Length: 349
Ligand code: PEP
Ligand code: MN
Image 1 (tube, rainbow, N blue to C red):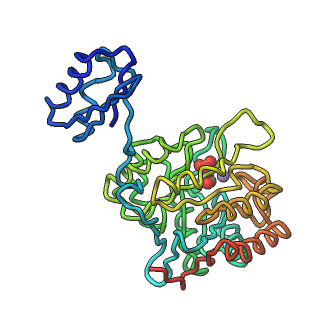
Image 2: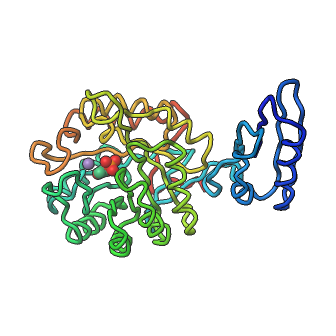
Image 3: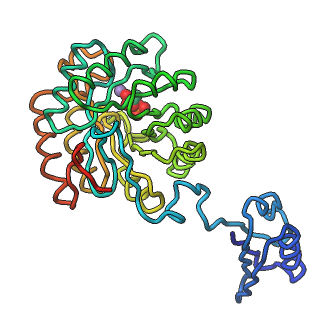
């Protein structure tokens, strides 16, 4: 932490800051410049916060230098992490050396629809299946998902297709049942700051896919990840899914720069969801190309066998030629950026 003194700060003001810091066992290093003095603090950052140094006379600013998130920061963990999703031989990596393609329907609607979507996803190169059994809908009148029946469908489709499952949990009370069925627990944009849910998934013993809150800064998002890590679960993958801006031509604005920004500061893997970012199927392939080019560790995409009948997010679901085009992109582009497509056979450990 650094205390920046105002240009008119007196020697007594500086001495007062040093005395306060030393009172709580810290060290203060004073460096006098031509115009202003700065004081570098070394010691327990929490105890410095309680000092309220900002309100002392002559203090212009107090800045922290270390990240407020500790467990997910690269400061103490410089190597980027790989998270494994799935049991035993079926486990698929998400990390810096591979590119992981996740696809499936927005919502599980029936066994037939989920199975067809899973076959489409696998055919396009996906090695993990997404699908919502519990849906966080803006309207209470919209389809809320099949709940437990949806989880059972997903588990059944995993057994027939071999694809591990990524599915959302919207309520801390459902964490045990979702963790029992799923290979990865998704926390959606509307729940990124639901701290009780974050703590519950932190204790569930399964990897977590943490989507960025639609109005969250990168720092708030990483603090949300820290809640999960702080409960003992470091298997967290971040997902950039677009943020709310003034632009109405897309559902959200994909913040592609968040990928390198996160990678510079956190060791956690980060993937991109172009479907929920754009809300339009015609933008999914171009945004997927952008995600691969910028260095994302994977993609998560909505597919549906009959988008026109989808109960949720039909306009953004890929099928037929769009999906074939995405399959080509995912097959060819990761190699250009030095990554191999992640499969259960990939062993990068
Ligand atoms: C989803 O992935 O189905 C979903 C609801 O996404 P988001 O939380 O990003 O809106
Ligand atoms: Mn959706």
